[in-house]
Amino acid sequence: MADDRTVARWFIDLDWLEQNNRSFLALAQGCLCPKCLGRLEGGKKQFSPADLLANIRDCCSKTPEFFIDRPPILERVFRIFLANGNQPLGLEELSEQLAERRGGAPQRTSTEVLFRLLGNERYYGLRQVP
Image: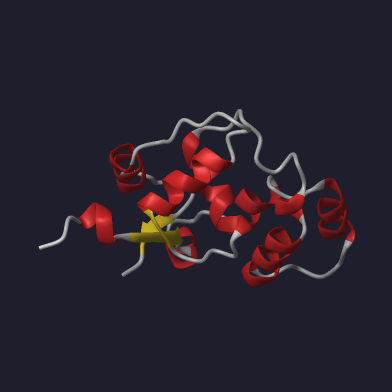
């Protein structure tokens, strides 16, 4: 039988966030570029999660500030999912993308560490694909 860590795929579970009284809008709003944040705050239309995901993927994630070195690992993982439109990723893929986005630091976060962090995560709604 395959190890759960090698087959598990993860994503932002919008339903989990809602069921646990967490706001995807509030979490994602902190990741918007200034231009998009202004559009969100100045607009009369409420953005849907799908609209936010598409906007962040197509605009905000392309700015140099989006993947800054300072946030904790889980914040960076959350931003990776935002940048890819919340497409599920395996732990190896997450580890590679974290390494790519560290600004030249080739260190990788091991799949074992990611598995433990994601398995206990209760803030960003990061869950295994059922």
